[in-house]
Each structure stands twice: as C-alpha cells, then as structure tokens.
Length: 243
Figure 1 (cartoon, one colour):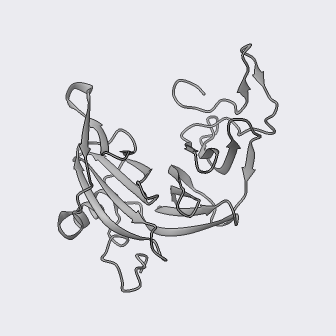
Figure 2 (cartoon, helix red, strand yellow):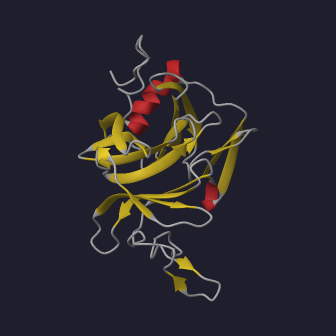
Figure 3 (cartoon, rainbow, N blue to C red):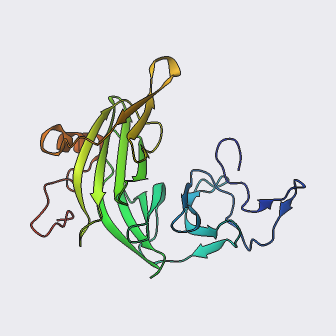
C-alpha cells in the first residue's frame, strides 16, 4: 500500500522486509481508488473494485482474505457487474456486502451475497446532484448508512437503509452541515461526523442519535445533493422503496 492509498501488491511483508507471496495465491492486481472493508463478522478483509493505475479503467473484481492468516480469494458473483466503485461495507445482519457504484450514468446500491454468489441492485438513480463523495457505514443494528457530501454547499445527507424488515427500506434522512471527510464513525455512544473546518482544519460533530429530516428538508436535500429523490419517497404499503 502506498502513501496515497494505492494497492501496489497483495502480498504479505515478512519480518525481514521481503514480500512473501505465500500463503497468498494470485493476489489482487495493483489498483487505486478501491474500497477496503474489514469485517470482524466476516472474519477478514474485502478489496472491492478500484481503478487500474496505468490505464485508468475501472476494476469490477471483488477479493477476500481471511484473517489473521489466509489466502486471497477472487470472488465471483452472478448478476450485476460492478461499475466504478465509490464505497462498500459488510453488514452482519444478513451477512452481505453492500457496494455503492456508478455505471452508465447511474448511481447504484448493490447487495453482494458471498453465500449464494449473487449480486443484485437494491436501488438505482441518475448520477445527478452536487455530491462529490459517497460513503457507506454500518449502523449499530447492522443497517446501512449511505452518505453523500458536497463542498458547495458544504453539507452532507445520510440515508439509513433499515435491514430489520423483509424488504430493506429507507427509514431516516439526516442532514449535517459541513463537507464530510470520511464515512460516519458509529459506536454505542454517538454518531461522529468528521467535516472540513476553516483553514484546512477538521471538526468532529457528535450526536447521540441521528435526526430524521425525512418529512421536511431531507427529501429536498437528498435530491439536490445525492439525486436520491426516487429512492427516498415515503415507503409504499409493502415497504418497497424502489417503486
């Protein structure tokens, strides 16, 4: 791993400082702008997508390495192929890998199931709005937190995709001042937003709970910032947010 976050090699560096290929077999190819997901419940780390540092073309492969020791595995999924990956996370509720990507002018939230080797699109919407960065995080109960942030206006919007129901649905929209620098930090005490401050500084905004702006400016912010208007409409009777 280089200082700018590019993956130069998937091999392990031994105590002698040399790259030990074993026990790794065919590690991930060099890449940048990939999503790395460590999951204690999955027992390892995922490397999702990225960009070829030479050609600049997006990579759509998914890799998994069991920890503390294990062999890199290139996972294959039937269904939707990944586009340019923006973010990823793994939920212990349902034991699925959630990936946010952009493909053919659309932003998509996908579910990748390592047990069934299937990939499905949970939601898809036009890639519009002022959002320049996207993040995925895990809520305390394993639900998914989708965040989009914009530098002008300096604001972020976070939608909570609840997984505690037969069909996942957005149940909360939180609007936060400031441009996010990374995914939400969630623990048993607070939700922490790391945002840009004046003069290149960072500020941490903490909340015990997320505030639901869904019925007020939340929907407007979702559309303007994230382009998520269709996904964020009030739930249908069956709870399916995709209609």
